[in-house]
Image (cartoon, rainbow, N blue to C red; front, side, top):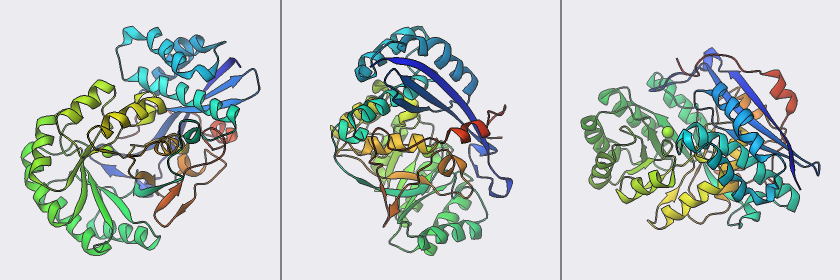
Length: 377
Ligand SMILES: [Mg+2]
């Protein structure tokens, strides 16, 4: 089998103003993605997704002009070898960033082909461990808003049967403590609550607030301070039973090793579409397993990125929860694939069809061409 053609689809969808999501990243105005379509001489087509890296045009060019030619004529079953050739081709770019995002889309597409060729979902090709994974409401949900509205949103998810959810904080000590307390009162003691600050606290605020979050029985505090402040993270971790979570801004195996060796996290959150794909996620999982740490994948892309994360957690023993963007009118969840995910009793089913297990809607890709400008303003 040979790879004969690689096409990229750069897509933007609007975030409706009435449901505009705000966090320490800014106000979301649109979502971008770069989808990779890989054709073979057998007729099998693979799909992958790259995280857009806030620079989707450069990423698209990198995939099309620099990396795709390396894979022409190669056998996708040799995906690890092919990946090493991609990294070698772009070695002078440095070890991570756009390069690992670009490689991710290509790797995921190759693994989709491998699964389709063998007639099995990726998680079973790589060693099946589970068929369902616990899920939590995150993504563009539960952003910065009036506390009554935040509580109403949280209540809605409890009524829908979700058992865990993540709030966005970072608006200041008093406001954050009040919001998390009120949400805890609203959802009751049996719901897992997490907080993501997207690196928004000062060291002092983080140390002060973690004690308050402890009183709210917070399950994890995500990126309270800039992601490379490992000593502060380790100190926070030592002073509170609240789990410390991070990893979406780590890229290389060396990065993850430093985070884990520093004792900076209880939970590690690599992103398949940022770090080079499913194979690299599995390497991080092995590192994490050596520290008895759970891997809760970071996901911010479309339902294709979600499928990649699910196929990954299907293969490892130390997997945690999957982030589910439950926001209304989310086209990257509902429009881009023809299938829909099965969620029941706080768990999401790992797609069991061959490869990634999802079917892309190519009409959708044409309907939403790329729109210039940043995703957050
Ligand atoms: Mg985060």
